[in-house]
Image (cartoon, rainbow, N blue to C red; front, side):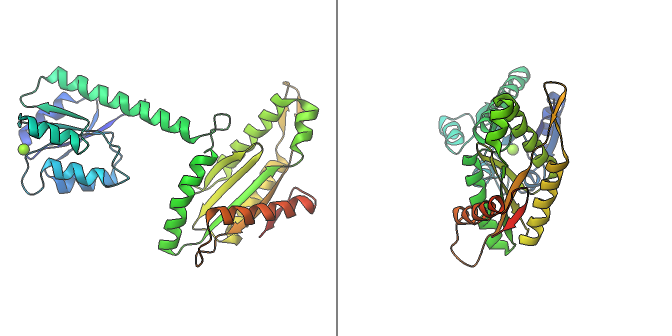
Length: 295
Ligand SMILES: [Mg+2]
């Protein structure tokens, strides 16, 4: 199991020491003020924050509000730990997005239980997010999630003036595979292709199953020539691979790919870019399959 990292924010060093000892089974990072805490969450991957409310300069509420307004940090659960016991303070903590509230002096084991519970909820949320964003058979992103992430990627590409390309691909004569070998072998071919996509993609590429035997790759910071290289490499990897089915028989398959580059100077949408890649894919099919065509 991956170790969880907990950030503790408190202006009183003694409190940090007590909490660190208590949470010794976790990876703990300490901060004595809100500013440092906000920097740490930007740099490290934090699973949970224990946050003091009364701190000079920036209080815990303000830290919480800043974390909540940042898409990158808004899902990190925050447990407020504070000496403030009045109802208004507690309600405010929940209102601005706190996950839990513990008053000082706290019962150590109770606090540990609350920490564990928050981390469990976080794991469940991650699991749900994964289920909602991926295709169960290939574990690639699904179409819905791809559309969402593609919108952000397009915005970013426009802002940073970096090229953005798309590859659309599908399995050649996939119907024949299903008809000849049966659907379970067809599924194996799809899974094989998804794995080839994963092992051939670069870190920033985003691969998705678009439907049936159709797949998409979004390539940030890549122009059409770069995307063509990625497409050719994948095509060759698939062409030279063999699938063993029924434990003894081998089967080869090929893919066709269409490549497009987003025009960032117009109002072109991701759907337009996909359409262009799809047109290029159509051309690849028409001109003999097992090839890469560009828009
Ligand atoms: Mg304090």
